View 1 (cartoon, rainbow, N blue to C red):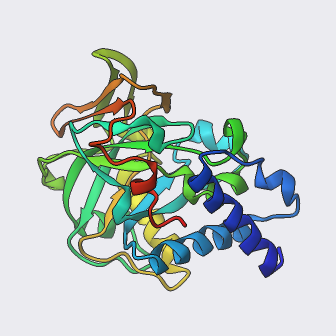
View 2: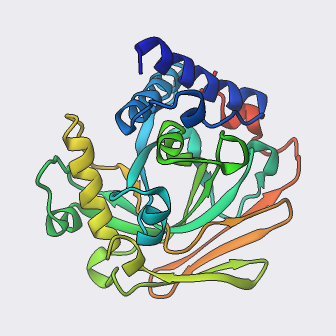
Length: 277
């Protein structure tokens, strides 16, 4: 893609945040777009957010399951950026109108205590860089109409990012076997999905090492204090106003969020996406 087209595509996505109206798939508008182009579009938005005052606080990893990779016809995960404005407090309702097409996923959040500089980072090295773990929920969203996404669309759209909700009880990673860790995703008290850490590239630590090497190839390092969302243990489920969602990781902890209707006392789309203009 030409630089002008990259900027045009990024502007269209930023416009969808402001208007609340999804756009047609970028892979249709720009049929020659590559994965490399998609990351350029993503980075163009990141520059706009940080120029407006937001801060990068970490990354999210997506496409971690073999089934999703087959569906997307790819052979590795993808990643997006987490900014300060994307984090929410557990148990505090989140306005539904902050999203276009929300779905939710249960994940492990890594909080780093040491830098990771790829390429060449091993899973063992990645694990030793983790200060603590937190149970997490990610509300994913798509600025692409009807979630009709290809790999190019989701990467360009910051890996279909929304908001991250972190639990509040840190866990020492040495106390957990993440490969066999179990998760139940509950909606309004009923189990909707279950999964294990093995669904996340064999172990969430493998996903962390992959990310360190992927961004390391671009000269970017993961730094102490960064938050990394591992990728989902289960399928994403659609959510609607009134839903209460809990991710229960036995031996790790629980995290709960609620999707509310329009409430002036809660951050809405303008506040959440204040840096997307």
